[in-house]
Amino acid sequence: MDQFNHTHRISVNAFLIFNDQFLLLKRAQSPQIWGPPGGHLLPDEDPVEGLQREIFEETQLRADIFNPVMTWFGEFNQGKLLSIDFLGKTSSAHVILSEEHTDFRWLDIRQLQIDSKLYFSSSIGFSFDNFMLAWQFYLLQENRLQELAKFSGNR
Image 1 (cartoon, one colour):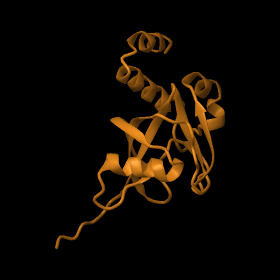
Image 2: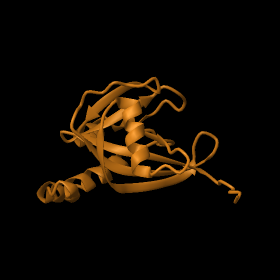
Image 3: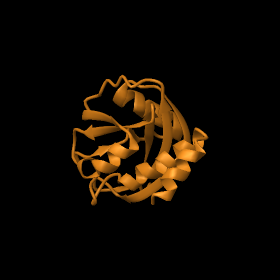
Image 4: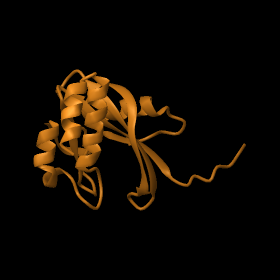
């Protein structure tokens, strides 16, 4: 049997959208940041299936998962973490939080931009720019090219 030297953990997250709004969850444990649903993969778990499991465990929502939007690698909770962040869509806004989170919000891209200081930290976690990138992927996914051009022109 081969011995593997694991250099980092892997997590998956979903920029989860319902009716043009993103779901943000507030972590109950440190760091108590706002972010999309997600978590660590189990050994040998498929990333999309693991993400669907995490979304359901944290929110009781079912989701369709689309393409990855971005990856991130760095220090998180005293260890190295590789995060794969996907675009996802759900057909319900009825969230039932697990004990891992204390609050949730459905926010559109404009609300995220206006209230970015409330939801994003410059030192850790997700940023408004991450959600803007996910929004652009979503508009492409939904074939809303005119709206994409409008947002791209404002940057």
